[in-house]
Length: 412
Image (cartoon, rainbow, N blue to C red):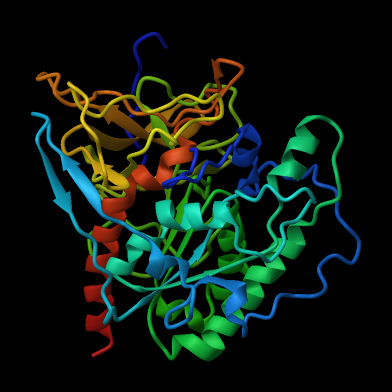
């Protein structure tokens, strides 16, 4: 990885949509696969793999009844710095030439250690916030899987762990991937997309099933948000992935994008061991800025959840978007010019620094929520983990759009 510029700092999601509320806590962040070693394995629990031939095992799969992606409303209000607005209507590309395969983060509130294969409000909400918009550039595939639940992670933090099985979650996604390749792919290029626990599972899938194997030729890109993919210090390839490099140029394909977002004025603490941290000597966490693959600072094209239900763990709510307040009827808000980002290095961490550029008019908010707050205290280790995908959504779609053109050009 190219070393990000050393920077000194002064003084140094929740996911929801419409009426859905998801009470993520700090435990959700631990589900990246980096902090799950304390989970208690449930003997024999990896049996009874879901039947991915059944529509009931998929949140999103083209042409099936009840497709959560197809039913998602992705309309957005463009909110300019002067307070004026413009509605942007979303339309999926019914002729998209590539596919996207998505694994969602920790969102299940099932009481057991592993989630059921059942579509609930949480799964619908996370599809709305993190994946449905990719329909602008690809066919969308999102399997259900028996993830490690919030209940299991809460119990672990309380010191009273309950049986849970990480291998079960991975096995489900592997079987879903195998089914997709056998029945749906038909030689098409594919983008792998994950967040948090989903990113951890996809990283393992890439290591085991894709990296250095023939199927790698069909990988348009791998997007791992809210994760700490490891590369050798100063390198773009090696470490976790042996043959898949980091994306460093517009139109580059077969590469990986990894980032963990923090406010620029609240970087990871020096002793933090989670997002952005090195996992060992000679390694560092990869940071690829979706807004500027080659490095540097660039504007973010964020799609932020519009509703007051977009709260953090403490119940912190997004305040009014405009001054004076006026209703926002669409589920997403775009705030051109408000946010920018760059990869930075601070101590043992590489991270995506989120910079707020206040609008002097005062007609549009200069505040966004997304921190993890427990008992009134912000937890600096987690940064803006809850809204990693929202912050970068428009940029990621632009990246995939250009990658698709490059990928298809190599197939002619």
